[in-house]
Amino acid sequence: MTSPAQCRVLGRWRIFASDTWDEDYLDLVEHATINLGAEGRGELAVGCIQASLDLEYSRSVVFFRFAGFDEGDEVTGSGTAELGDDGSLEIELSFDNRDDVLLTGRRD
Image (cartoon, rainbow, N blue to C red; front, side, top):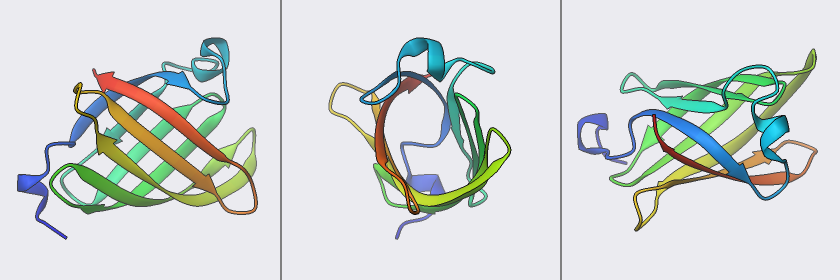
């Protein structure tokens, strides 16, 4: 792993696309975002999901575990956020005991 200072993925990203959910669901409660901080912590808000992230860094990828709630039900899992060649962020969420979801974001 690398230090956060060398990671190009840090910051706030607006999630605008998904392979599973439509745009109306993404922004159901608030604008869908992922915030990747330099302190090893982050946040995810998409649809009804609100989650805290524990981060590990490489230069163009952030690896994370998440824990939070989806309509009041506890959700946990892991994921990655990887910088694409076009400057977009590809986010893969793997829910524990549920499906995987691919999201796409751009800098907010």
